[in-house]
Length: 213
Image (tube, rainbow, N blue to C red; front, side, top):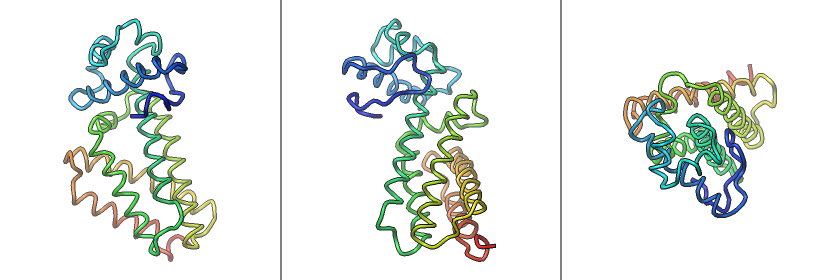
């Protein structure tokens, strides 16, 4: 969760908290929702339960969020932004000599995040329940794909073409689905699925004979 002093604008929120006290309350609401999602599916959460877990009044909660859906969308957006931050760190120069090490670094970092945030996984079991969640997920996929594409073009000479951009975007979406499956099978990430995902990325995205047509 972000520090209260650095809380960004949140999708779904009625307003962006400006004062430190308000930012702290919103951060508590999001942290409480994350804890509850470790034990409960989204459809079993309610605003009264979230407010009680956060230690705020229901009136305070409704000052910032109209309903539980908005809270969950804001939390998901925050989690997905953390995914982007992880990717930005992984693709920063200097890059590793082997591009497979780069994709492995990204995969390990994202798997580590899911282990630290078990509530994240509940939002992606089955189909996403709300259009706003799907929109945030798609925006995040595009950002991740562009970061990865840029690093592979810049650091390893992969083609700077629309076709390769499409391939990295599809790979990010496929990797997300396989990560969901790995953590649905095992809270720590099914090792066999993670190994197959690593192999898929190496053979499909990094295979020179494939990516260069």
